[in-house]
Length: 272
Image (cartoon, rainbow, N blue to C red; front, side, top):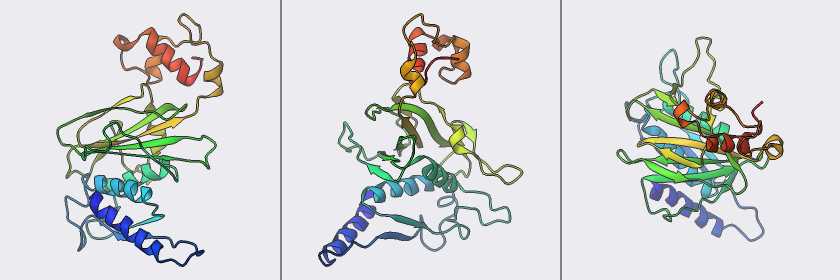
């Protein structure tokens, strides 16, 4: 898959090499892109498995400087973002695109990996958003392995991990996808889910990614309140166990430690 996308990057380089000196380089677009030719394949291009090549394509082509990705198609065949039915129910790729558009900025950042990128089952991309007042950076991690989980330590300078968006499914051929365990679907009133509001507390920058899943991990600058907070042991600014559970920082009382309360305070400010 990466080799195929890099062929496109090589084509772009060849085109730019033939642009007259002083002329602006042309934009190179990914045109009619789909997971398989001839209207796709049911159970493949309209299922969870399609989201892996789709998102990986975004990552690879963005790093190669591509500016536009045209998906074939919105509705039609077996590779549409919406099912070719009267209800036009979203396929998994629709939600993958919604998450990308919502969370990934337009500024492509390089990712330094401890393995040098040798593990072909694990993909990592990062974008920042210089136009946003929030100044956030988002990692997209993709686990293509059907048997191995990955434990990854993420870092983004002085930014803090604020929220996680991990997507799973019942199977590769399933058309149901879950964001942090919640089914993504259109409401009875026809409204799309607010995926940004479905993120969970960032917590530790050591993240776990299960087999055949992908996730977006959003880093943001510390808030003013977190810089002003007294996060020392015993401080009144620290959250109680119940407050940590309510905010999603921990799941059970067994996980309630002073270290967890201090970590939450340093990231989010005083527990008010």
